[in-house]
Image 1: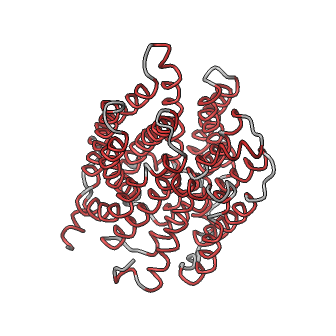
Image 2: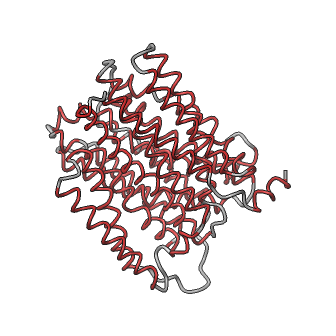
Image 3: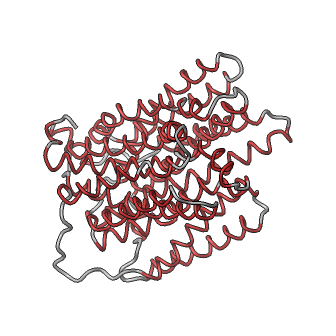
Length: 465
């Protein structure tokens, strides 16, 4: 924030929005390392324990489209403040849970709150910073804090667990409350509407929201109960029916929740497809590598989480710079290079695991992985929000975040299936799972390379410099 253009109210606004983004992303992974302690105290069964993690993703991924559209209609600032307040309250409440169901409920509420906070925060950033290099730098900082929050979540969760597993639930509350106190000073007021407020698409909301919830639930349940489980395929069938109904409603509605024309925006659609797959590949690798480090090497939860700190450092320090470069020179090349570096990291891990020193394996795999993530995440975000009107910025942000969250669940379920089924084919499960992720990453690299060419806006930014 030392850059002069980020001083004053704009700098404070960016700091607060980035802080909220960090908290939302951090909570996805921070509780994972505390699961053994939670199980010991609350006596949760292994089959229900995973929902302490998954409930947050369920609420986050399921409500993102609704959250983005609500922010566009009712005001980005208003929705940001209310949802952040709910997030803080649920964080505090999480410290007092006394059973598995209350823990899962607290996590679900936090995920729903994040689904409203995240798109509202990104839309506010677009409103504070106009088109051009200044917005690119702000987007880079926003992207870096979100990515770092996710990557460093396990490190912070492991440190908090040294005090108590409840600290992993509560530690975001003081920061959220401080952000709430400062936000009215720095964030711009919602624009006063001159015409009638757009009608709210209730039919769309009550089809797409449960549709996404059921889809995320079905995919997540498949990771633990299998694809043949009635709750898995039943949820997925119901989700498909609801999503088809949603598309039919949107095609005819006067004020649709998600105008179908949004899917015809080439840069947004391409960015979301790449984000869906690349984030899923990363989560699949993180899942497998975490199991390997703990089960084979016998490392502690904190040591295992610390293995991903290097990638977080790359993201925090380099993502802002890559965002500016991507906005000025085009996003497709940076996406391709970033995912390609991640593919190299996964391939190296598969070929080297068990053959080199564990510490060297972590270091050498994290360098290209962190550098690739730092290039890819901001490039995708810049591409997804290019040429988006202000009254649709919340919706576009919701679509962007939804692609990441749902993609993570889908690819993780597929990776888990490969991991579980590998022994029956005579394969070593850890290598097989990461080999699957590596193969997917190579395919994502090809998809990224086929992205749209730079828009005329990029040429304007280049000329301005």
